[in-house]
Image (cartoon, rainbow, N blue to C red; front, side, top):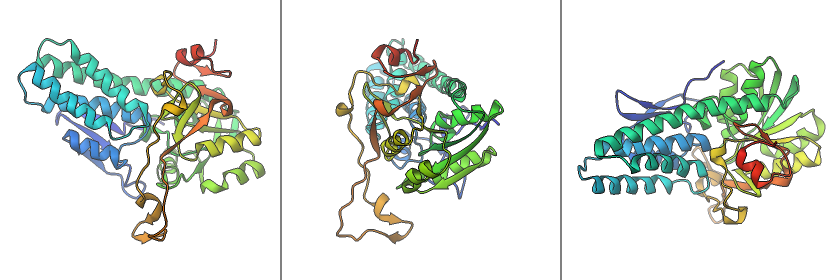
Length: 346
C-alpha cells in the first residue's frame, strides 16, 4: 500500500502536474499546469487543496515562475518572481503552508549569482520540499499509528490524505501506517459540507487502499460517538497557533463532541503548519462563495433572498486536543511553546 504522488514536477515539460480534486470521485484527471495564473486558479477552485499540498504547490509555483520569466536583468527577474509569489500567496489566506513553501524557495534564490543560478536554486529547493513532505508524512504516520489500538474505529473530517499532501497524508497517513503495521482500522469519514471532501476524497483514497470506510453526514457525528464504539478522532490542520488548531469548518464541533464522550481527539500535522508567533485572534479565516452552500450541481437549495455564511475553517482550542502528532513525535498537553516548537513532548 503506497499511494503515488498526487502533485509533482514534470521535468520534461517543466510544469506542475496534479490530480484535479474537484472531479473526484467520478473522474481521475491529471492536469498539467503551465503558468502561475493557472496554478493560482487551481488553488482558488480547490483543484489543489490541503495544507502540506499547498506548501508543495507554492514551492513549485515559484520554480515555475522562475523557469518562465524571460527577464535577463537579476533585479527585474526577482521583481517578477516576487509578484507571482504574492499572487499565489493571496489565494488561500488561512493555510500557513502555502506562504511557507513560497518563502522557502524565495529564500533559496536570494543569494544566487545570476538568473540561471536562481532558476536552478528554485527548482532544487522545491523538489527538496516535495521529497521532505513524503518523508514527513511517513514519520507522522509512524508516530500516530502507535496511538491507535490494534483493532479500532477512527472518525475523521475533511481530507488529510495523499491528496492533501504530495503523498501518504497526515491524518490518513496515521491510518495507513497503522494498517501497514498490521492493525485493523475501520474509518468513519464525515462528509464535510459544503464541498464534501470527506465523502468525495477521503472515501476515494481509503477504498483505493482497501481500508474499510463508512461515510456519514456531519450532523451524525455526535450520535455515532454516543451510540457506537469510536476509539479516536483524527484530523489534519491548516494552521496551528499557540492556542488553537485551524482546520476545515466543522472540526471544532467534532472536538467538542469527542471531549463530551471521552474520545481522544488527535491532530496530525507537520511542523510547517505551526504558526507559533500568532494567537487564534490574529488569523483571518477565509470566507468562500455563496454558491458552495446554496447550489449543488445545477439545483438551487437556498432561496436567493436568504443570506449565506461560508467560512472555510474554524479554530479548535488546544484544551480540546488530546495530542498533536508531528514528524518529530507527539506533543501532549499542556502544549507549552517549547514543546510545540520542537514538535514533541520531552
